[in-house]
Amino acid sequence: MSLAGKHIIVGLSGGIAAYKTLSLIRLLVKNGASVKTVTTPNTLHFVTKLSLQTLSKNNVYNDVFSEVNDFSTEHISLADWADAMIVAPATANTIGKFANGIADDALSTTFLALNKPVFVAPAMNSKMYENPAVQKNLQTLIQRGIHMIEPPVGELACGDEGKGRMEEPEAIFECIAGFFLTESDSGKSFPRRRESPNDKGLTKGGNDGTDGQVDPAPTSSFHEKKILITAGPTHEAIDPVRFIGNHSSGLMGICIADEFANQGADVVLVCGPSAIASKNSAVKRIDVVSAKDMFEVCKKHFESADITVCSAAVADYAPKQIAGQKIKKKDENLVLELVKNPDILGYLGKQKTKKQILVGFALETENELQNAENKLKSKHLDMLVLNSLNDDGAGFGHQTNKISVLFANKEAKHFELKSKPNVAKDIVNEITHLYSVRAT
Ligand code: CTP
Picture: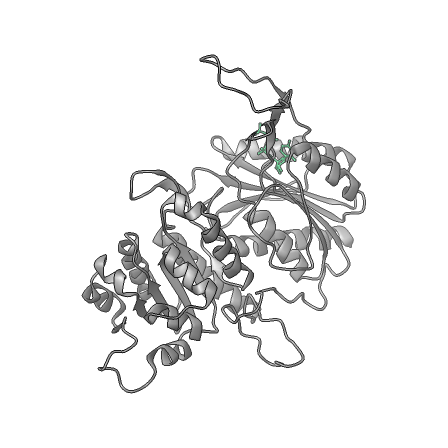
């Protein structure tokens, strides 16, 4: 993917994952981007200035009060020069500064001065990542339109297992390249600043102090069409404090809902427990917990839906009985009896009329295409999105996804690894084709 002509600031804060950012800089430069690096003072404990200079082919900006610059205010001229910024690794400290407008080093001053798209790839111990203060700061940034590159689950530098490890350089590169690809395809920036009567014409955005919401397109093929989407995991209660769940973050379905709403559709998103906010405030989001709750809400909205996309990772089984009190530890073994949950997609497939379009998802670990074909047929689907756990960067806990799309009446299509917002665009695009054929 060419990034020729793009100016990208790579910001590094002081974490061990900074070594991976050297590969990211190489990838960006190799693909034609001009790169300038900005660091905090602590970054240089982990990587050297010489490595950053050599790989980026530019000076490193790391000192706000340096005497050697050319009398320009460096963080301002850098911000003017850039088309986008990626901050990787972003430590809890740097994320806290970004969220709260603190500017006390080269990186945080550059961030504050920038009104261009910003990508943030957090990196820290999972306990720090899960801390409510860090989560709140991340949510603040997401709501302001920052592109968050969520850490995958895996082994951390301290030896712990969990969520907090910085995403791999290749996946971060895909997010940035995918962003510019979409921008050039559609001729618009994403996310865009909402126009207010006082700031007409200011449409470039990202880190601009707004809520990062995306303007719905004025007219489109989905104007006034009703779309029902399921997303996220479901949690099946065992007792008042425990549940059976899965690793789905809900991001893929939330991106699909945003994309439909951006195109003017009337979207109902039925979402299991997820910390990710919808970007488009036009999405009518109904938060649910269990598969049974999700099923009830879907039954209510399905009949009036023109298109339904079931992307939720619904738990197939739930405990037969939910204990009224916390189960105390007693014997060596504990046996839970589970009963089958309703198959929401299967049920909707049986109800659907010829006019309605029904799309399912499948996450497979073996015999992917064959299992997906079977699901497409047995659940009476018009389209099925397959992601395989065997593909790097695809599926749960990643900012990126790699999909194949299978249809009831035509050849399957295979797509490259892309950021989830861009995968959502591909999915909506395929549904647009199906829908336009159905409508004629
Ligand atoms: N699905 C659903 N309700 C369920 C289970 C799955 O609506 N109780 C939907 C998912 O949202 C997805 C599709 O069915 O769109 C396939 O989900 P998946 O878990 O891959 O398949 P299952 O039908 O559960 O079959 P299996 O787990 O045996 O592969």
